[in-house]
Length: 401
Ligand SMILES: Cc1cc2nc3c(=O)[nH]c(=O)nc-3n(C[C@H](O)[C@H](O)[C@H](O)COP(=O)(O)OP(=O)(O)OC[C@H]3O[C@@H](n4cnc5c(N)ncnc54)[C@H](O)[C@@H]3O)c2cc1C
Image (cartoon, rainbow, N blue to C red; front, top):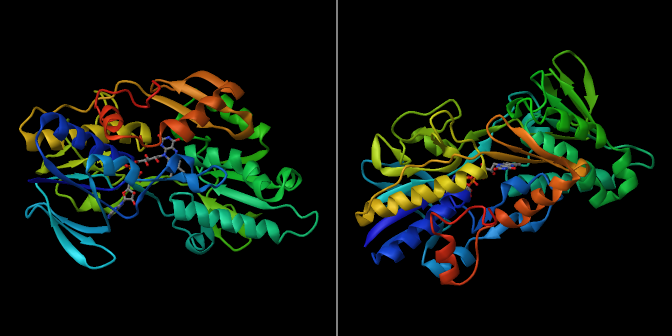
């Protein structure tokens, strides 16, 4: 039986497995599909700024077992595209796994902040473990506060994640220590460029500014962090800001395996793929999600977002399966682009198009964001028939659209 191996059980990898399994079932051609990933969960990374909950992880088994996709837990250490094999380190041993087609979907990691003290004193919300560690530290610092003492939290990096985390921070504090302690906390958001959310463009800027004011976040733009200490952040202008906790949200970079693949990478470490998400220098390999540099249309590249990772995963799974089954492949394309940014108690902002023209902002969009985060981005579950229907590449995603 032909072997399809998918590396990475995130949004792209899970959907690649689902769609490949469906295409094999529909074509009546058996494929052996193996998903190699570190944990038996999909981490719902877009929720990691929220008040911490174990629901940030969705188990893979209810989605993949009914479709006969085998999950192998381990770390892929290297890929040999000439030999068509992977080295996988599992709890038991390091082994070699062969493939006929491979989908690489190993996602992204937060860029390191290259300043003294960042590794020792900085927290992140990049992974489930990172978000859990920060939540525990928050709880511990709050428990140690003296009466009338205010907690100082500094968020470094004013992109999407930094904005969502900073505006959510009082809710997170209130969840552990109550509304009064949350109201007294000092929340700061530091951004190196002259504008908050530089990648967001001008459209959402007024709503973001209103949200910062409404949620009591002190914003400093045009500032650069020089050092992070146990109780302070020092800026390159010499100022020292009090900081009980520092969270670093300075952007994402493709996971390192992408750079080891033959062919070109972009500045974010993403492997350059063709219109069918195939690696030009190794045509048995497809790449999807945050590790792929792919055109969504003639003018735009896919972003490191679930919005692009899921359709890319679907397309890569479809093409890898079709290639093995001798069926036609499809080009990846995604004409629509929207953003829905959470802004804490202010609400949220919803934009459409690459210019991010605001459609709605404030409290009324919050319900939409909550629906996206708690329902739409979770993997489908159900019986085999329901999963096969959800795995149709032409089925709308998110499901409610
Ligand atoms: C805090 C935060 C907020 C975000 N908010 C949004 C948002 O609002 N909207 C949005 O669209 N996107 C958002 N994103 C981005 C979104 O989460 C990513 O674009 C998405 O997760 C990418 O999916 P992926 O499948 O490419 O990678 P991932 O979801 O990162 O999955 C990769 C998987 O591969 C596994 N893996 C990696 N390396 C190996 C290896 N060597 N061996 C085995 N397994 C491996 C990982 O453990 C992981 O399970 C956010 C991200 C973060 C961190």
